[in-house]
Length: 610
Image (cartoon, rainbow, N blue to C red; front, side, top):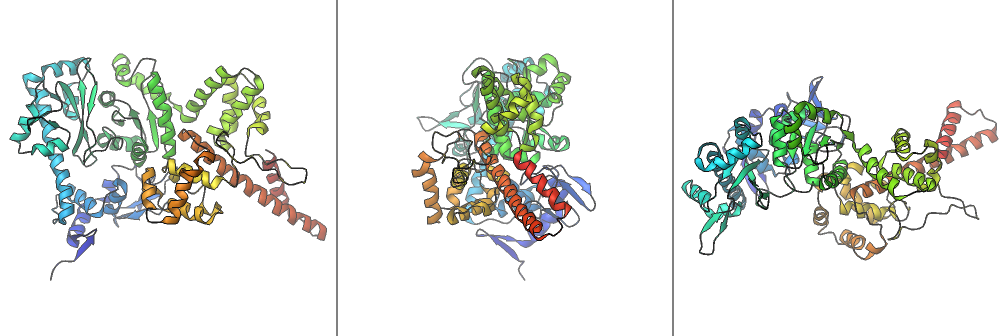
């Protein structure tokens, strides 16, 4: 009798293969590479890699072979974990685990086999290229310039071997010859970005006279290269462009090597450059990664969040580095991370600082790293102090700053900090609150009704939250930065939407939030839904001129925080009115008013006035 088989996306896989993979894979050991797990009763517990949380709700049961998160309801066996963590199909996830366990998987359908075959061929070409470059650097006379460069940079033999650094010699056909000798088809090497096609139908090396730094996937394959010039040649770095196995902005250098240390320390260090990262590893900071020469992206933040929410941002101490730090902080916060900023002396990068001062001094910089709140406030305080001279205006701006960057429950503590930096008293800031807080209850009009705030137009500061327009604003923000759905799905639930269509669209986004990383993902989700597509078109198209625009992630988060605060205030006011009415009825009827109702009524009144 033939063995049973699973069929996924047109691919038949023998169920016995799946059973063998699960039997040979220790789910706790595998997930423990990426998530810090601690023993609790009969299970292991850690922070869920699939949603932002501060209290661990992610449980792994090694004896039963499954995981479950009680926060987002993610669950399943180790194959389901890998599918969700790496956004893989079932067959691809099964093959990754099967390869790791030394198990052969039966052939896919022709289309899937061709796609996988192309990737495997590129991996083979990249692996051969990495071995060739490494051999040239370590053993051949052609690698002498690179060996001298490594010596000047403090890269010893152990570091060179650990990161498989290499050298592309000053030849046009050095790698081409090696690839041919290794049986690699040169069109495959072309697709991998290793060679270019010449005018006569031949091929030539892309990398010449450069230190070669390979980047690895989490599963161990070489997916890309960074070629570092040894002198002042431009560009300083020549990096692999997008290929079938590598997409710029989705990967982090050395994450494969840093995962275990980052999980153990429950923290990770992000730097800009390859050599900064390598220098940190050499100095004992094995939880360092690099952004691969790109502006920091939401995809990279999402990858970090899978490992740990605690991120040290250590970019270069120049104007470009400070600007990159500010943007990365916004992106990390949106991904549910807790960034801290490491302040290097002016003109330094992590590599130069380590070579000049050593690991102990760098450890002191990590210990002195400031929270993202202090970093954001410091930047804004400098702008306020230099741009406004009137004390009242400074106070107003200072209080608005707190409303933008600081959660309501933490504002008193940070109000002291901001007041000290601005040379004001805490009372000055508090008194300015009614002038700056757009969430304060609307004033009464002549008829006794509430005057609502003016509808947000294109010239309105992104602060005021207008009840009739917030639904479209929230959707507009999520269209621009879908990753924010993870952080705000529970704080801004679909039930708050009054418009039927907008509520349906937003509810769908909330349900699928873990899959939505780019604006195009949302469009694809509603590609066959005419009603939803029309709404999205209206929000992004015709209504754009009357919709508040948010240039930065911080602006979007600030607006969403105001929406959340508006809900909280509305709930407090609703409960206060209910209690007020109840107490009036009890008083009029002569009944005794319970003490707990009086205390709740008094507490609500205090909150509403505050």
